[in-house]
Amino acid sequence: MTTTIYKSSSGEKVIADMPLSYAKNAVNKLIRNEPERKAEIDALQAHVDKLSAEAEAKALAGGDDANPRAVIGGNNPPEETPAPKLEGRAAIEAHADDLLTEAANWADGVAIENEGQAAKVGTLHRSLQEVAGLVNKQADDEKRPLNEAVNEIAKWQNGYTAKAGMKTIPAGSLTKAIAATGRLSGAWLQKLDDERKQREKAAADAAFAAAQEAMALRTEAKETTDLAVMDRAEDALAGAKALLREAEVVSKEKVRVDAGEGQRAMTLRTIYHADLIDAPNSYALAYGHYKQNPEFMAEFHGLIQRWATRDARIEATRVRGIPGFNIRSEQVV
Picture 1 (cartoon, helix red, strand yellow):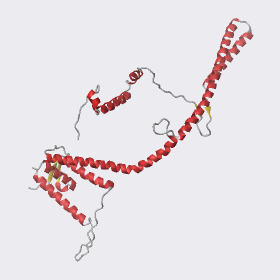
Picture 2: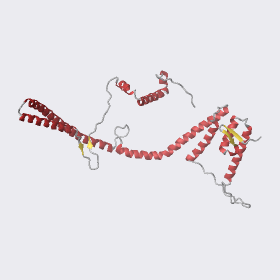
Picture 3: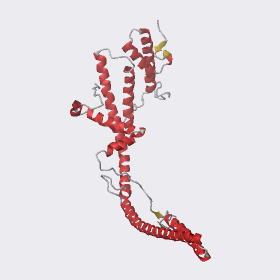
Picture 4: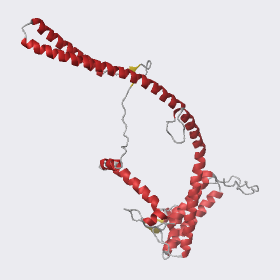
Protein backbone atom coordinates (compact mmCIF):
# COMPACT_ATOMS: atom_id res chain seq x y z
CA MET A 1 0.00 0.00 0.00
CA THR A 2 1.44 3.37 -1.06
CA THR A 3 1.47 6.14 1.53
CA THR A 4 1.36 9.88 0.88
CA ILE A 5 2.28 11.04 4.38
CA TYR A 6 5.65 11.25 6.12
CA LYS A 7 5.42 11.19 9.91
CA SER A 8 8.22 13.54 10.99
CA SER A 9 9.22 14.50 14.51
CA SER A 10 7.41 17.82 14.00
CA GLY A 11 4.18 16.30 12.64
CA GLU A 12 2.79 14.76 9.48
CA LYS A 13 4.05 16.07 6.12
CA VAL A 14 2.51 15.55 2.67
CA ILE A 15 5.29 13.85 0.72
CA ALA A 16 4.28 15.43 -2.59
CA ASP A 17 4.76 18.89 -1.09
CA MET A 18 8.24 18.23 0.36
CA PRO A 19 11.20 19.99 -1.32
CA LEU A 20 14.03 17.84 -2.64
CA SER A 21 16.61 18.51 0.09
CA TYR A 22 14.09 17.87 2.88
CA ALA A 23 12.89 14.66 1.23
CA LYS A 24 16.48 13.43 0.83
CA ASN A 25 17.23 14.04 4.49
CA ALA A 26 14.01 12.30 5.54
CA VAL A 27 14.57 9.17 3.47
CA ASN A 28 18.19 8.87 4.56
CA LYS A 29 17.13 9.21 8.19
CA LEU A 30 14.48 6.49 7.86
CA ILE A 31 16.82 4.11 6.05
CA ARG A 32 19.44 4.54 8.76
CA ASN A 33 17.25 4.51 11.87
CA GLU A 34 13.82 3.05 11.02
CA PRO A 35 14.11 0.75 8.00
CA GLU A 36 10.85 -0.95 9.03
CA ARG A 37 8.89 2.10 7.78
CA LYS A 38 9.17 0.73 4.25
CA ALA A 39 6.04 2.33 2.84
CA GLU A 40 7.24 5.83 3.77
CA ILE A 41 10.76 5.05 2.52
CA ASP A 42 9.45 3.87 -0.85
CA ALA A 43 7.16 6.89 -1.23
CA LEU A 44 9.90 9.33 -0.23
CA GLN A 45 12.42 7.68 -2.55
CA ALA A 46 9.98 7.83 -5.45
CA HIS A 47 9.39 11.53 -4.69
CA VAL A 48 13.15 12.16 -4.52
CA ASP A 49 13.70 10.33 -7.81
CA LYS A 50 10.92 12.31 -9.46
CA LEU A 51 12.23 15.71 -8.26
CA SER A 52 15.82 14.77 -9.14
CA ALA A 53 14.80 13.74 -12.65
CA GLU A 54 12.84 16.96 -13.11
CA ALA A 55 15.76 19.03 -11.91
CA GLU A 56 18.16 17.19 -14.22
CA ALA A 57 15.85 17.59 -17.19
CA LYS A 58 15.42 21.26 -16.47
CA ALA A 59 19.17 21.73 -16.22
CA LEU A 60 19.76 19.90 -19.51
CA ALA A 61 17.08 21.97 -21.21
CA GLY A 62 18.63 25.21 -20.00
CA GLY A 63 15.95 26.07 -17.49
CA ASP A 64 12.40 26.89 -18.57
CA ASP A 65 13.39 28.09 -22.05
CA ALA A 66 12.99 25.58 -24.88
CA ASN A 67 15.99 24.91 -27.07
CA PRO A 68 15.22 26.66 -30.39
CA ARG A 69 17.60 24.36 -32.23
CA ALA A 70 16.03 21.14 -30.92
CA VAL A 71 13.81 20.67 -33.99
CA ILE A 72 13.42 18.00 -36.61
CA GLY A 73 16.41 18.07 -38.89
CA GLY A 74 18.52 20.09 -36.51
CA ASN A 75 21.94 18.46 -36.91
CA ASN A 76 24.04 21.19 -35.29
CA PRO A 77 23.37 20.95 -31.54
CA PRO A 78 24.64 23.84 -29.42
CA GLU A 79 27.93 23.47 -27.64
CA GLU A 80 27.57 22.50 -24.02
CA THR A 81 28.51 25.29 -21.61
CA PRO A 82 30.49 23.82 -18.72
CA ALA A 83 29.30 24.70 -15.24
CA PRO A 84 31.35 27.56 -13.80
CA LYS A 85 34.13 26.41 -11.49
CA LEU A 86 33.48 27.59 -7.97
CA GLU A 87 36.33 29.37 -6.24
CA GLY A 88 36.94 31.25 -3.01
CA ARG A 89 33.93 31.80 -0.80
CA ALA A 90 31.50 30.20 -3.25
CA ALA A 91 33.43 26.91 -3.33
CA ILE A 92 33.81 26.83 0.45
CA GLU A 93 30.13 27.67 1.00
CA ALA A 94 29.02 24.91 -1.39
CA HIS A 95 31.28 22.39 0.36
CA ALA A 96 30.19 23.56 3.80
CA ASP A 97 26.50 23.40 2.88
CA ASP A 98 26.91 19.80 1.68
CA LEU A 99 28.63 18.81 4.90
CA LEU A 100 26.06 20.64 7.04
CA THR A 101 23.26 18.79 5.26
CA GLU A 102 25.02 15.49 5.95
CA ALA A 103 25.60 16.54 9.57
CA ALA A 104 21.87 17.21 9.94
CA ASN A 105 21.19 13.64 8.77
CA TRP A 106 23.44 12.18 11.46
CA ALA A 107 23.04 14.62 14.36
CA ASP A 108 19.36 13.90 14.90
CA GLY A 109 19.42 12.71 18.50
CA VAL A 110 20.00 9.04 17.66
CA ALA A 111 23.20 7.41 18.93
CA ILE A 112 25.72 5.59 16.68
CA GLU A 113 24.88 1.88 16.55
CA ASN A 114 27.78 0.19 14.76
CA GLU A 115 31.38 0.57 13.58
CA GLY A 116 30.35 1.53 10.07
CA GLN A 117 28.27 4.45 11.28
CA ALA A 118 31.09 5.50 13.63
CA ALA A 119 33.55 5.58 10.74
CA LYS A 120 31.21 7.68 8.61
CA VAL A 121 30.59 10.15 11.43
CA GLY A 122 34.33 10.32 12.14
CA THR A 123 35.02 11.12 8.50
CA LEU A 124 32.29 13.76 8.53
CA HIS A 125 33.69 15.26 11.74
CA ARG A 126 37.17 15.65 10.24
CA SER A 127 35.71 17.06 7.04
CA LEU A 128 33.78 19.64 9.03
CA GLN A 129 36.98 20.61 10.85
CA GLU A 130 38.80 20.93 7.53
CA VAL A 131 36.15 23.18 6.00
CA ALA A 132 36.12 25.27 9.18
CA GLY A 133 39.85 25.76 8.65
CA LEU A 134 39.18 26.76 5.04
CA VAL A 135 36.61 29.33 6.21
CA ASN A 136 39.12 30.82 8.64
CA LYS A 137 41.88 30.87 6.01
CA GLN A 138 39.58 32.49 3.45
CA ALA A 139 38.56 35.10 6.01
CA ASP A 140 42.22 35.78 6.83
CA ASP A 141 43.03 36.11 3.12
CA GLU A 142 40.17 38.56 2.60
CA LYS A 143 41.06 40.55 5.71
CA ARG A 144 44.78 40.70 4.93
CA PRO A 145 44.69 43.71 2.58
CA LEU A 146 42.28 45.47 4.94
CA ASN A 147 44.52 44.73 7.92
CA GLU A 148 47.54 45.99 6.00
CA ALA A 149 45.71 49.20 5.23
CA VAL A 150 44.64 49.56 8.88
CA ASN A 151 48.24 48.92 9.99
CA GLU A 152 49.51 51.64 7.68
CA ILE A 153 46.94 54.05 9.11
CA ALA A 154 47.90 53.08 12.66
CA LYS A 155 51.59 53.49 11.85
CA TRP A 156 50.94 57.01 10.54
CA GLN A 157 48.76 57.83 13.55
CA ASN A 158 51.22 56.43 16.11
CA GLY A 159 54.03 58.46 14.58
CA TYR A 160 52.20 61.54 15.79
CA THR A 161 49.93 60.56 18.70
CA ALA A 162 51.12 57.25 20.25
CA LYS A 163 50.95 57.52 24.03
CA ALA A 164 54.11 57.57 26.09
CA GLY A 165 55.04 54.46 28.08
CA MET A 166 53.91 51.83 25.54
CA LYS A 167 56.12 48.73 25.43
CA THR A 168 56.74 48.43 21.69
CA ILE A 169 55.70 51.79 20.24
CA PRO A 170 57.65 54.98 20.95
CA ALA A 171 55.77 58.10 21.95
CA GLY A 172 54.48 60.09 18.96
CA SER A 173 56.05 63.38 18.00
CA LEU A 174 52.91 65.36 18.83
CA THR A 175 52.57 63.49 22.13
CA LYS A 176 56.12 64.49 23.12
CA ALA A 177 55.66 68.08 21.95
CA ILE A 178 52.37 68.37 23.86
CA ALA A 179 54.04 66.98 26.99
CA ALA A 180 57.00 69.37 26.65
CA THR A 181 54.87 72.48 26.12
CA GLY A 182 52.59 71.30 28.91
CA ARG A 183 55.52 71.07 31.29
CA LEU A 184 56.66 74.56 30.23
CA SER A 185 53.19 75.99 30.78
CA GLY A 186 52.83 74.04 34.01
CA ALA A 187 56.07 75.45 35.40
CA TRP A 188 54.97 79.01 34.57
CA LEU A 189 51.51 78.47 36.02
CA GLN A 190 53.04 76.95 39.14
CA LYS A 191 55.23 80.06 39.49
CA LEU A 192 52.12 82.25 39.20
CA ASP A 193 50.31 80.10 41.74
CA ASP A 194 53.24 80.29 44.17
CA GLU A 195 53.14 84.08 43.85
CA ARG A 196 49.37 83.99 44.41
CA LYS A 197 49.88 81.92 47.56
CA GLN A 198 52.44 84.46 48.78
CA ARG A 199 49.96 87.29 48.20
CA GLU A 200 47.27 85.26 49.92
CA LYS A 201 49.53 84.69 52.94
CA ALA A 202 50.54 88.35 53.08
CA ALA A 203 46.90 89.45 52.87
CA ALA A 204 45.89 86.93 55.52
CA ASP A 205 48.74 88.02 57.83
CA ALA A 206 47.83 91.66 57.35
CA ALA A 207 44.16 90.92 58.02
CA PHE A 208 45.06 88.98 61.17
CA ALA A 209 47.29 91.80 62.48
CA ALA A 210 44.63 94.39 61.68
CA ALA A 211 42.00 92.26 63.38
CA GLN A 212 44.14 91.98 66.53
CA GLU A 213 44.71 95.76 66.55
CA ALA A 214 41.01 96.41 65.98
CA MET A 215 40.03 94.09 68.83
CA ALA A 216 42.52 95.86 71.16
CA LEU A 217 41.19 99.31 70.19
CA ARG A 218 37.62 98.09 70.57
CA THR A 219 38.38 96.87 74.09
CA GLU A 220 39.94 100.25 74.90
CA ALA A 221 36.99 102.07 73.33
CA LYS A 222 34.59 100.28 75.65
CA GLU A 223 36.26 101.88 78.68
CA THR A 224 37.19 105.30 77.32
CA THR A 225 35.31 108.54 77.13
CA ASP A 226 37.54 109.76 74.28
CA LEU A 227 35.56 109.91 71.03
CA ALA A 228 38.77 109.85 68.95
CA VAL A 229 39.72 106.47 70.45
CA MET A 230 36.24 105.11 69.68
CA ASP A 231 36.46 106.37 66.08
CA ARG A 232 39.89 104.77 65.64
CA ALA A 233 38.49 101.44 66.89
CA GLU A 234 35.64 101.53 64.34
CA ASP A 235 38.04 102.47 61.52
CA ALA A 236 40.45 99.68 62.52
CA LEU A 237 37.61 97.15 62.52
CA ALA A 238 36.44 98.24 59.07
CA GLY A 239 40.02 98.04 57.78
CA ALA A 240 40.46 94.54 59.20
CA LYS A 241 37.25 93.39 57.49
CA ALA A 242 38.44 94.85 54.17
CA LEU A 243 41.75 93.00 54.50
CA LEU A 244 39.92 89.73 55.23
CA ARG A 245 37.82 90.18 52.07
CA GLU A 246 40.99 90.88 50.09
CA ALA A 247 42.64 87.72 51.43
CA GLU A 248 39.53 85.71 50.50
CA VAL A 249 39.56 87.11 46.94
CA VAL A 250 43.24 86.24 46.53
CA SER A 251 42.64 82.67 47.80
CA LYS A 252 40.01 82.14 45.09
CA GLU A 253 42.08 83.50 42.23
CA LYS A 254 42.73 81.07 39.35
CA VAL A 255 46.07 81.46 37.66
CA ARG A 256 45.70 81.17 33.89
CA VAL A 257 47.45 81.89 30.61
CA ASP A 258 45.54 83.02 27.54
CA ALA A 259 45.88 80.41 24.75
CA GLY A 260 44.53 82.56 21.94
CA GLU A 261 41.17 83.39 20.42
CA GLY A 262 38.76 80.49 20.47
CA GLN A 263 41.09 78.34 22.62
CA ARG A 264 40.59 77.21 26.20
CA ALA A 265 42.92 79.06 28.57
CA MET A 266 45.81 77.19 30.19
CA THR A 267 45.12 76.56 33.88
CA LEU A 268 46.34 74.28 36.63
CA ARG A 269 44.11 71.35 37.51
CA THR A 270 44.34 68.88 40.35
CA ILE A 271 44.67 65.16 39.65
CA TYR A 272 44.96 62.35 42.17
CA HIS A 273 47.06 59.17 42.32
CA ALA A 274 46.97 56.10 44.55
CA ASP A 275 50.50 54.92 45.40
CA LEU A 276 50.91 51.58 47.20
CA ILE A 277 52.33 51.91 50.70
CA ASP A 278 55.58 50.00 51.07
CA ALA A 279 54.36 47.58 53.74
CA PRO A 280 53.91 43.76 53.81
CA ASN A 281 50.13 43.91 54.34
CA SER A 282 49.26 46.73 51.93
CA TYR A 283 47.57 44.46 49.37
CA ALA A 284 45.71 42.60 52.11
CA LEU A 285 44.38 45.86 53.50
CA ALA A 286 43.31 47.00 50.03
CA TYR A 287 41.59 43.64 49.41
CA GLY A 288 39.68 44.00 52.68
CA HIS A 289 38.49 47.38 51.46
CA TYR A 290 37.46 46.31 47.93
CA LYS A 291 35.99 42.86 48.66
CA GLN A 292 32.66 44.49 49.52
CA ASN A 293 32.40 45.64 45.89
CA PRO A 294 30.60 43.01 43.71
CA GLU A 295 32.21 44.30 40.51
CA PHE A 296 35.68 43.98 42.03
CA MET A 297 34.96 40.47 43.30
CA ALA A 298 33.65 39.35 39.88
CA GLU A 299 36.89 40.50 38.24
CA PHE A 300 38.94 38.97 41.05
CA HIS A 301 37.19 35.60 40.72
CA GLY A 302 37.66 35.69 36.95
CA LEU A 303 41.40 36.29 37.43
CA ILE A 304 41.69 33.32 39.82
CA GLN A 305 39.71 31.10 37.40
CA ARG A 306 42.02 32.01 34.49
CA TRP A 307 45.10 31.11 36.54
CA ALA A 308 43.54 27.85 37.77
CA THR A 309 42.53 26.86 34.21
CA ARG A 310 46.09 27.54 33.05
CA ASP A 311 47.63 25.52 35.89
CA ALA A 312 45.24 22.60 35.33
CA ARG A 313 46.81 22.12 31.89
CA ILE A 314 50.34 21.93 33.33
CA GLU A 315 51.27 18.54 34.74
CA ALA A 316 53.54 19.83 37.51
CA THR A 317 50.93 22.16 39.00
CA ARG A 318 48.16 19.66 38.29
CA VAL A 319 49.93 17.02 40.41
CA ARG A 320 50.44 19.44 43.30
CA GLY A 321 46.82 20.50 43.13
CA ILE A 322 45.19 23.92 43.32
CA PRO A 323 43.70 24.89 46.71
CA GLY A 324 40.00 25.54 46.35
CA PHE A 325 39.69 23.69 43.02
CA ASN A 326 38.94 20.11 41.97
CA ILE A 327 40.90 19.08 38.89
CA ARG A 328 38.95 16.77 36.58
CA SER A 329 39.71 15.23 33.22
CA GLU A 330 37.42 15.12 30.21
CA GLN A 331 37.78 13.13 27.01
CA VAL A 332 37.00 15.13 23.88
CA VAL A 333 37.43 14.49 20.15
